Amino acid sequence: MLTFLFPPDEPDASFPSLFTEMKQFFQKDMPLPEGMAELHRILKKYFPVEYILVTAATERQGEERMFLFPEITGMRKVALNSTPEQLLALSHGPERVVRLGDQDDHGITLGVIHRLFPERRFSALIIRAVMARRLIVSLSLIVLEHRGENVFHAGHVNAAFALLDDLMRYFGRHVSLEAAGKKREDPGRYLPLVQLPGMHQVCEMIWQVSRQDCPVLLLGETGTGKEAVAETLYRSSGRLDAPFIKMNCGSLPESLMESELFGHEKGAFTGAVASRKGFFERAHRGMLLLDEVGELSLPAQTRLLRVLQEGVLERVGGDEERRIDVRIIAATHRNLDKMVQSGSFRSDLYFRLSVFPIAIPPLRRRPEDIPVLIRFFIARKCSEYCVQNLPEPSPENMKELLSYPWPGNLRELNNAVERAVILWMGDMRRPLVISPTARFMPQEQATDHAADSWGAPSVSERFETLNEAMTRHILRALERSGGKISGRGGAAELLDVHPNTLRARMQKLGIRYDSQNMVKH
Image (tube, rainbow, N blue to C red; front, side, top):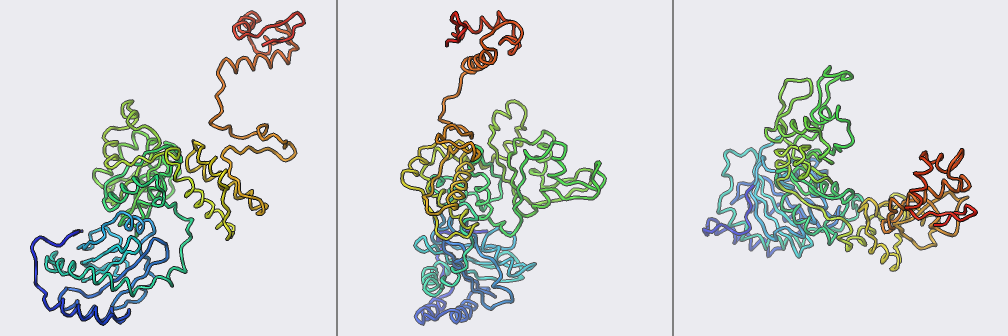
């Protein structure tokens, strides 16, 4: 794919009459689709074009339109760009661009053309503009079954730039998105990374690497949203038409790891009653997310390295090499640098995977994302129960949530919101209260003191020291023995220590007795 942000350096005046005809076309301001037919007639005189394709999209899923001339059967069924890709293009993409591509390129627009013309070779000149950071419009000139690589030349690129602004204004006026907007995709399906202020730098990096094929290594604590980043990267790439396979390397036993990754042949081991594709073969031409990649065994790491270097694999128990085209997205919460130093992770694999590392900050470092995430999680949960009126936490509740460190990151926040929405739905007259340190107990044991109920302690609570734990345990033994230290049923027997050892420990911890054997501490 050749990308031009500016016209070629050498001016080209190959098509003087083109601009005269196009000026007359813009003056007529013909409505679509009549304008498409006229535009096709004019452009075909000067460009090697058989079809012209116009796409338009906004930041909202479902608000997408496509026009093809001449029309082909089934074109309305072709899916267009995904919301993350649209948002990334609107926020970070160049405002004016001309691209030249063929069947070997991975690109969103070219992916649409591939679906329109399956199994056909083609070349395309794509003119795209982002209008006021709110609307993406592109015009693709498509020629099929071309011979040779130089279908379009510098004169075509010059002419495209000369016509770009007028073309985009024309389509901006005549492409209506209102009808398509009525069929929006569920807004709660994908985590809106590009709407999170604290993820701006991460989105910048996604935009830079999404159209490449190099491996990406996602680093971050558990629950920070590594899978959501991988999903956004996939949906903003040119591999959107191919599978996106996710594998958690920590969820499989080591004995099955290689079989799950690379597949196996029938009879390769006990229980292999049939041949089976592994994750790599299932992800052919798409992406493979290796979550918790630090859990891979050393033998699996060795075979993974070969696949990355050579693009071929052998199934377990097989001798046939299979060529695959898979882009690897690896993710881990572990420190791979230290694992390399300790020898538990191969250094050559680490350097291969970390071509483009992306560090995902924990939620405590981006509290500005919390209100956006809470609204997203509330909308997603209410959508499951067909609740239209979405509740919101009070300002006081939101202030509490912003000050909480969220050690479980997005996963903990999602669980807290889900729990709050479920409780709120029991009586919608009550306000929605999201509590990160909520504690629960059976109804018959409920008291007026929430602190007495069981549940996960707040991370803000001070952790008990070893001496404090020992003191509490000895006091419990003394209470059960009635203050008796030695002899049958004494505290020393309960604790399985010598009486003198217990007395010495009690003296060190400051546990004393008065004359009536009453414990003092």
